[in-house]
Picture 1: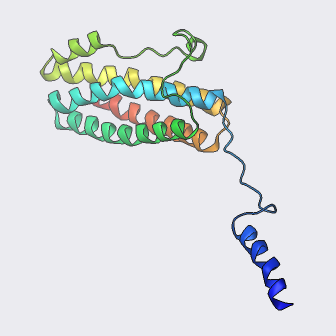
Picture 2: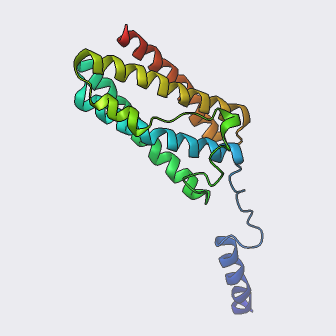
Picture 3: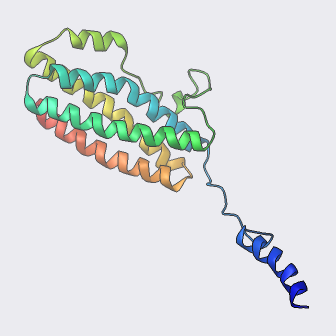
Length: 182
């Protein structure tokens, strides 16, 4: 009789240990189109900024200009990894598949283009520093706009937290950059 009880008890134990029929799976993370769009647009926003920051590190005349470029580049690289991981985990593309003008109602944020970066690369001295800082301030403003779009309409708590942190830190960075220009 004892052997028969063990025969029935063993499968029940295995089922319980493996998350059998009574196991409730954790709900999938909830996100919406705004979360996806925010991450895709922020990723697109970071790509030209990386080129801009590399120029600042390389060609900045003032040590504080080179330092701020390096600091922002490091922070942005880490954030880019987080964005890529999140989009990949959600099974979403890293680049929006919507048509080019689809995000205009959300700010249609202009990106730094190669012509602007090439013009900046041709500058030197104080003119480079001033132009670099001015371009960076304008570019960083775009990140604030993206973050505010996410906090207003996003659903995923981690992505909303990233947006809140982005809004706060980038606004502080802009203030620092403006003081450096003056």
